[in-house]
Length: 95
Image (cartoon, rainbow, N blue to C red; front, side):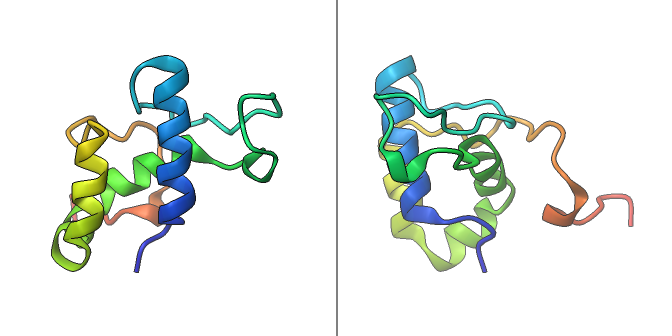
């Protein structure tokens, strides 16, 4: 299963892209309480969800290819290293 809410993340990424020119929030980016963001998105962990989507891209490719197409259409970057993400979201590569 996915460890993020897909539709709110996509809507948040669209707004982020509109405001900043690219759909690439920092891992610690949380939606601010500002007029350009919908009230229901305030404090949403958009950066964390985007990073987790990168980590779970194999699951997305296999089970939800239409969601991958949606993210690709907005020029979502899959290849970036996830950064400082809690280990509960990925398995150790050393094991």
